[in-house]
Image 1 (cartoon, each protein chain N blue to C red):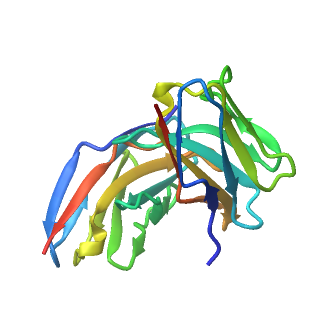
Image 2 (image 1 turned 60 degrees about the vertical axis):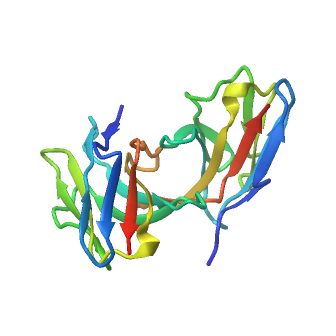
Length: 115
Length: 113
């Protein structure tokens, strides 16, 4: 069964350093989402792509976060510089219209710890 | 904007018994979808069940079923014949078309043997 791949699974960094996360969606899924999940809370959308175009980045802290999906397939989320408050789980999801429903399928996530 | 309220931070159930998790939401959209996801301690988010808001018939998926009350904006999840593997954090989430999921705060479900 096809799955969303993410790497790394765990990342420890010091504040002010740069970090990058990678996501490979399920083949054929044109829509890709990055969510941030703080421990004990529900995930919140950071950015959504339709193919290579950004559809929604209203909650992305653009002074330090950037995201790209250059060829409309895999995607990279970057934080520079990292801050203590960025410690969280970063989840990637992808979707495709199945009988009109864009069900999102999630990857295993990247757990970021900023020291 | 959509908001979601899961009023039960924690629930527990005996193995083989039935439990219901509640969810209410607020949306100005007329066309939307509703999902329940589970997140076990391994933390991978897994789809449990989905419902189209325009459908009156409640969705079912094996031991999982929903009670969808559109006018009341209520979308509860019933788990029958609970199993140890059902232990997880459960999230209710509405979604507009291909837009973002809006997650609630979640309900931690514990299953006792």
